[in-house]
Length: 160
Image (cartoon, rainbow, N blue to C red; front, side, top):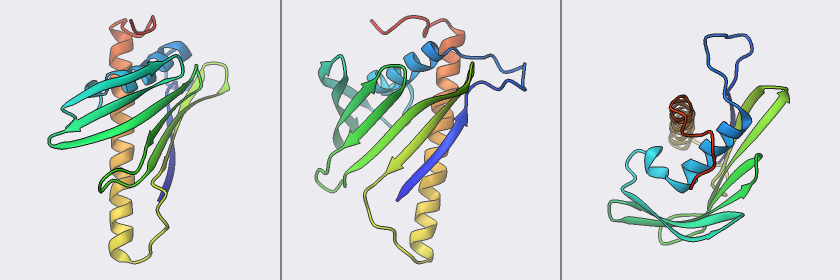
C-alpha cells in the first residue's frame, strides 16, 4: 500500500496559528527520529546504534517486539525512515518532506510505502483505510508535538 498526504504547517489565512520557521520544523522532524518516544505511542525505548551526519540506525522496542531501522536526513528538506524486512515485519518506508510553495507557507508531505501489492476485497480495503487513518492521526500528533516544543523554545537550535 502506498499512501501520501499533506499537512499544512503555516496557514497564511489563519493568524491564530503561530507560524513555525523552516528551521524549527526541521529540528522537530529530526527530533522525531532521534527521540521517538516523545512522538510514538506504545514505543518503550529507542537506542541509536549508529550515527552519522546523514542519519541514524536505531533499535526500537515495543514490548517484546524489536525493530531495527535506518533514518536518513537531507538537511532542511526530508527525513526518510527505512525498515528492512525482519522476522514477520515486511520492508517499509516513510518519507517526510518539507515543502514551501511560497515564502513561509510550510507543508509536510508524508509518503508511506509498505512495498506490498495492492489487494482487493472488503477486508483488505477496510484494513488499508484503517491504516491510512492511523497514519494521518500519528502525523497530526507529530505536528502537534513539534508545535508544542517550538512554543517552549526547544526547537530554536539543533539537538545536542
